[in-house]
Image (cartoon, helix red, strand yellow):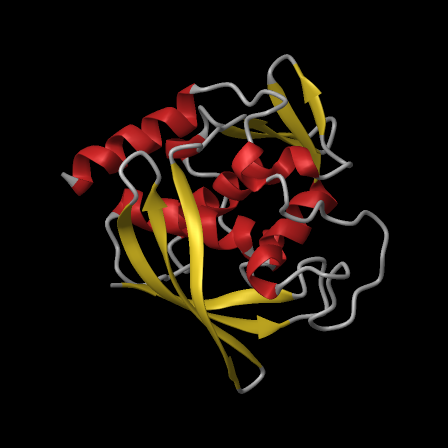
Length: 209
């Protein structure tokens, strides 16, 4: 049953256009800042770490479920790029540096690097974009921009149920919930480490349960 729901979830995310209300379930998620210097762990006032890192956690969980892996290993280039694509396609319109053109979201390289930093990744260290994602994410060398097909995931919701401090960061426990039936698709435990970056943290570990 969960496999069927996951297939439905992935299909809806990839096929539905991202309209002005597509992210209604996440409208309280913070819009990434454009030119602010961040201190480690710094976030907009009133924003919790869980809210700030929702794009990264959501994107990673969808990619891990799609690849049927239990523990996050971003040395897998295909998985790493899919995590990054999920973040950009689902939450990128909240970034004022993004532009919509012919149904695609366009991101300057520096913006994509900011999102990659939430996964402790560097674009320079990543392998080339995998063939498996070229129908959804491409790089225009001439314009120095990434082009992402818009996604919409209004069938699942990230729920963080416990936050505990650990050395250098936080440990989050929660679930990705299938909202149609209020059913946990997967439960997870994630480790976040403080970073001097736009999101204020990086996902340094995540395991499904």
